[in-house]
Length: 86
Length: 117
Length: 234
Image (cartoon, rainbow over all chains, first blue to last red; front, side, top):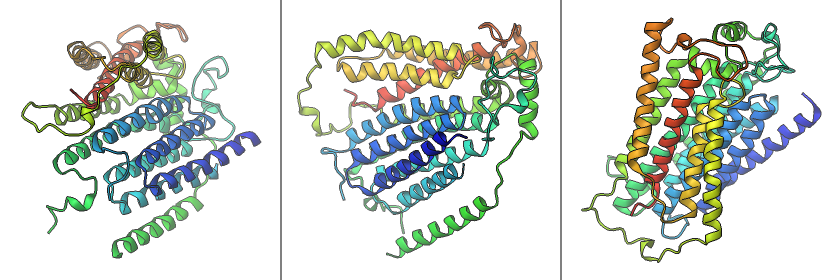
């Protein structure tokens, strides 16, 4: 595994963990949904480095695309203003 | 390779923490989505063998010595199924949240304690 | 407060468990067991170049049938719960804001792009046995094309009859193809009911292109149906 691939893995790993932490921590729901979409997107890049092109295509199309949109539609149906009711 | 394992485990722990402590129902389902991503990442990383290439037998990987040149294809097949089922479970869970909101206008889980004794 | 303490203790315990597992693993250096047999015999027995496709459709075909069933259950549940009945209370949410039609530039661009996206999705699942791809990826791209039309035009409605017909006939034909495997070849969902052909051409690998076409159409229309149910139905 070349140096570039190792570097990309570490960079993507840090970005994914920080995005997931932000998704669970912030109060604004739209930001949380977009952060989980970012986690899926970087996971798709990691699958490509792990030599799994089928899984990378599926994760990019379904995880980073359709799942985020389904969350946003559900959010649109359940709030008047997009912020958390506590 | 260790970096992928550490990332996967960290995602599982962050998602579990979100599912256990958050009060907003949509945040709980977001935590479930993060846990699923972490588990799938670890599964694909277990099947990786260093120095080998993707399991497609085209001109770069001849058929007769395919078993020495490809990574493990079985975890990839399992993760393919798992991703699609994950999105179906998320859609159904969000439908439940929408129906609950239409009854009582609140996304906080502490307002739905009718069945607790 | 006690609940947070319990959650924290559970997470500490889980981390210790992960560390114990992680410190004792050794990355494998060669294929073992089932994977070795699949890699050695997959191309000759099944005629497919993409080994992951061969495993998903034939060696693990029952798992794929179960996945299609789970997806169907989820789509049915969403459609059942979000059906709008006339005697339900009208939600005084932001339905009263007047909706504005999007600009003509956006609509024309989306109408030009959506058939190309559908064609791309069909290309992905027809070439599932030759290059990375397959039914689920192609179905997701087709559902994304329908989603683009939803997002760009507020007057776009899908034809529920046509979508229901495509989805149900694809599912039935998938099971019929599996049952044909019992009579004409080795067992349920065997792909040798059609001739294997030569490795690398598009009409090879027996029934794998047929099965993946049916799965791709079914998954695409199903995901489009889920998205249509979750919009604000009026």
